[in-house]
Length: 68
Image 1 (cartoon, rainbow, N blue to C red):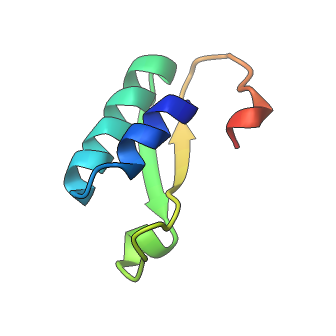
Image 2: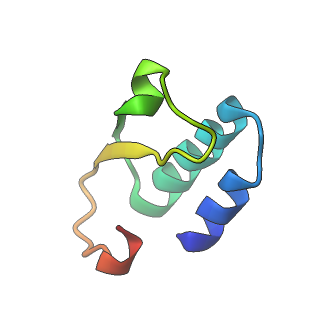
Image 3: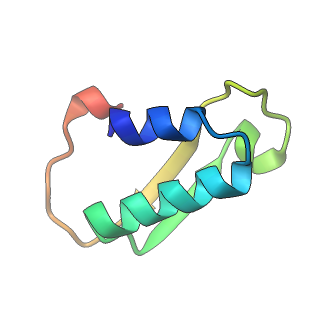
């Protein structure tokens, strides 16, 4: 997961970043719903702001806590 976030942080276009994030979570965790909250959702983010995302899936897999 850290690799995908590094790639995302090196990109300048937020739409490209979001597409990569969505594709990653859909393929890795079979995400059915992704909800973006926080500064990215309301538009008052800074260039290095993080992405706050809720993911809903039926996949019963424990997430590595180092990803948080």
